[in-house]
Length: 132
Image 1 (spheres, rainbow, N blue to C red):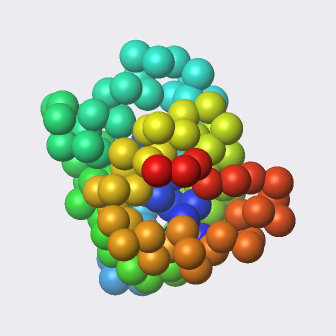
Image 2: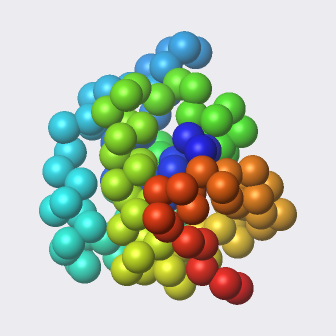
């Protein structure tokens, strides 16, 4: 479940770079996720960065760089606040931006490994993955 939630967190910059081998930095844990999610201008900038079609801020670039590791390790280096943030972002994307979710899924989970692995957990939260 942690991994698929992280996929959604790509816009939040809550997890931006690895501070050391044991954990991701918590430097950006106080970012206002609601401001990012509810401001199309900011949201689109992060989305385009992660798609590789736009410029990245330094934190966006770090997030883009660390995302594959976070997916692979089931977010084991995430703080509790980062895990909660990814849950919020996943809900937002699945409910309000399903096409964006699918776009990022093609890039970061093209084999749908994480979707398949966490489908039951996501559905228990009352969420549903969008169809292709």
